[in-house]
Every structure is written in C-alpha cells, then in structure tokens.
Length: 420
Image (cartoon, rainbow, N blue to C red; front, side, top):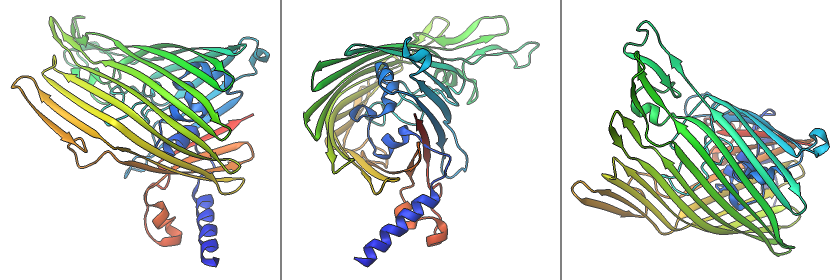
C-alpha cells in the first residue's frame, strides 16, 4: 500500500514538474484519448458543429503546437477566442482564430483528423491562413451558426526572377511543382449549422462546411500551366446527444466528406478524388463525481481514386472500436488515455489498367496496423486549464532527472484554455 502511494505521489509530482505552465487546450484533451471529438462534449466541437459556438460562453485558448520527433521545434500553433459577452450577447456569440497552419477540414488544428482511417486525413496543407471567423446565436431551444475562413498565398515574379514561372497562386513553401501546388491549395470556406432540442433528453446538431480550394501556376506571359479542375471540398456532419440514463449519454454520429484533387494542364484533365463516410455511436459514462468512460464503434469507408480512376484505394472499417478513460486524480490533475482499433479492417489496392487488385485484411500493407493509443494529462491553475498529449514512453521513463532515460519530447502536443 505504501509503495502504491509513493508511486502515485511520484507520478503526480513528475507530471506537475514536467508540464509547462504555458501550454495546452482541448484539442489535446480529445487527441489524448485517441477519440474523434464528435463523440464527446468538448468546446472543440465548434469546428465541426458551428451552432455549438452559442453554447461555449467566454473562452480563450492557445494551441502551443506539436513538437515533431526528433526535431525540437513546434508547429501548428494558434490562439483563438469565443466571445459570448460582446454587446451583451444581443448580436450573438463571435469567435475568431489566428493560426500558424490551416486546420484540417472541420477540425481545430492541422494535426488531428475528423474522419476514421489512415487514408481519411485532409490532403491539403496551407500555412498562409488569413482568417477564420465564426458566429452563432440561440433562438429559444434552437441555435444557428455560420463560419467564414480563408487561406491564400501568391508569388509574382518579373524579369525572369523564377525562370519561366510568372505567378504562383498557392502555398509554395514546400515546393513549386504542379503536384506540390495541388496539395497546397488556397482555401475559401463557408459553413453553416443548426442545433435543436428534439426532446427533453435529446439534442441534435447538423453542419455543412464547403470549401473552394484553388491553385494556379502561370508562366511569364500569363498562360496557365496548371490549375485545379474542380475546387470543391465539403463535409456534412450530424450527431445527437441522448441522455439515456442519468449517468449515460449516447452519441450517434454521421459524416460524409469529399475532396476533389483533380487537375488541369491545358486541355488535359486528370481526375483525383478522396471521398468517405462514417456512421457510429458511443456511450459516455459518468463515473464517480466527474470522471468519464467512453466506449463506441464506427463503421467507415474511404475511397481514393487516382489518375482518372486508373488506381483506386479503398479502406473499410466494419467496424472500428474505441474506448477511453478520463479521471481526475485531484482538483488540479487529470489523467486520460484511450485507444482505437479496426476490429474488421480491409484495404484494397486496385489497378484498373491491368486490371488486378490486392486486398489486405488487418492492416493497410504498411508496418503499422490499425491500432492507435494515446496518453494525456491536464493540470489546472485557477481558471487556466493546460492539457497535453504524453509521449508513449513517459510512464516508463518519467522525466530524465528521475530515470536518467531520454524520453524525447515529453509532450508532443500542448493546449491551454481560459474560460470566464
């Protein structure tokens, strides 16, 4: 008993000493449980369900970034605020976000995915976000939300400063070829959602997010060398929160998403698309005074069609199972962990030019399988809540000054929130 107590004290002290007093917010909470945010109550749902902005109140958050391993640098940083008391709330609730990178479709950062599967992540990257503004207002038991966001990069060259290239309209930091441009498109997005009370025990939220994603590569005469053939990207999301029992909430979720990556060079069009859907449900059990256990399943399929359907990649979860626990060790320290696994998973690589296909069950043909697990922790100082994802080796090594072992980046991702 004494050994167990000493172990708990040592772990609490290590977490308190190691957690930076300048770091994390609730995207780290969700990712620390290896969950999609759709399945739990969390302010970060505003990026998927815009109408929920009306329910957040007043909040400032800081995404202190993720630290790539082994390079000791951070990326994907940002600061945002939800302001429910502007004009005493008469004109609704406003939210503004300032970021280093454009987030994934329907997400609050660029490192998390709102869909199931290794082939479901947003393929576009743009580090030139201009703005992201949201608005929502409650009308009785209903709430409505709107969103407008833009990311835009452009370079113009004269006098042969870049050879034959005259204008680049995309984020060209990673490269300036037509392929680079296609995956670093400029973005103009609009979205809208509605939330309503279906019954005294059930609330429903729906949202549609549309983004026009464009790029062009022009020569010095203004002739377009390459551009998008279609700019359309969208996501439809819907969920319900049903209070089944006093301590159990059931959350069914449905999503449909589509990314058009088709390109055009003169009269030559190459069609590329990534489409997917998912339907699932999770139970949220309230344990003790304020702990949470989540258990659920998701059925999903992602289809990536490349080169005018010459090659088609399809992954199917039938289903994915996920579980997570969040427990408050005391009034200021929270520990969480979670995992997900493709219980019945298939990956098919189909070549229509031959034709032939390869179908794999259990993984996608890489060294990694469909199992994913994360650890997380949170510390509270007054109104400031700091949440972080923990390095997988942290429970074994602890900080270097305790074990003498090098863990690397102890907190790969950190977020801070301040509600009032």
